[in-house]
Length: 96
Image 1: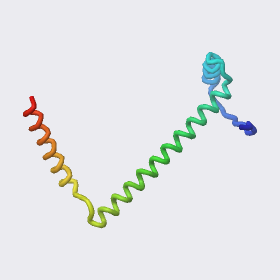
Image 2: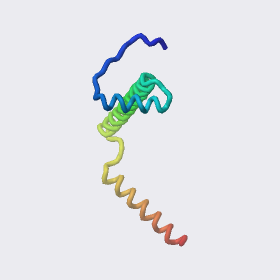
Image 3: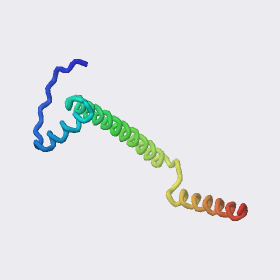
């Protein structure tokens, strides 16, 4: 990819020096490391936005389901879970 844009930023001299030293220790130009950090950041943000969109769609679907009277209440789900847990505990005692 052609590198045609310039990105200028202000930072503390100590941070710049420490960063340059670490990049040099890896035998890599600091600009290459910065590009890699930027790519990772952009990718992570895109993944987080994608997950947030996925989660929002799931919540919207669940709300439509509730509005349509489909599904079970929290109390029903908890009661069912308690019954299942009790059943698993009984099975555990029998096999012991």
